[in-house]
Image (cartoon, rainbow, N blue to C red):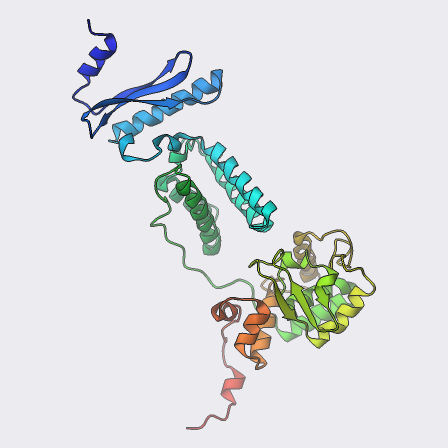
Length: 388
């Protein structure tokens, strides 16, 4: 006598699948039947269920719905490797991704600032999912698809009215995260394929003219000398904001006139030297005084040398406060100091390759991108003795 199950299979023999359903026995499993194209018969496939009782039941029902939706759209588990990986919970994989990055920070193979930004991007994505569950219910890894990503990027660019640069930064992170998912077979292919970057707009920040620089220099010399020295380290030596917060006094050699930027604190993870111009050496001597070698060059104690590390956001907040007080335009930002220093050094006749090395760029194109194009007439070109 044939069992009920055999009869059901016979009745569905003309189709390629039998819908998934939860079986609660000693072991909770989801059972569905998909046609095996090699043996040309329906084959039973088991998918283990995670979690307990109510949550376990809720999760199993979602898995059934997702499997059935895929089966209706001609999906076959026989054409995919590790087919069940796509049904891993998205939030659990995000946690794994974060933990693995934390480990790499601990081992020194990734910068803390980079991992911090990864977590920030993921918080934004998970918040978007939570706020838009009806349209984008990303429960499993396979839900993190191109349709969802395009919707999220549209939200970032159009609804939040962000710049092309911000759009591109989000896309770059999503590509990084997608590679992680593909490498570990949570998804089959990169869902960002075919999503183009936005054309970059001109930088908002501008090179600081001499008159404004003199105004800033005079104000800081009278009111915040240590912050002035720090600003000049960016202007003359092109030290980045996060690097400034990690520099130690022992990394500065005033006698030989250079700073060592260790790979452990630099953006490119390389240990490199930068030259200190004579004008800055004199100011650094006053700033450092009799500080100990292990003191931070710029600490949380009013930008003086000290034991407590400076927070990067403090640098920006003081710059914004000073700019408002002096009624300076917002286009002159803290990183305008670096743009201005590079531009001035190139205009002074220093070989571009030397400026590249001082800025610790791997390519001259990067160095040149910091310089502004002429606006209007260029007096140097206009007055040059350039007869035919």
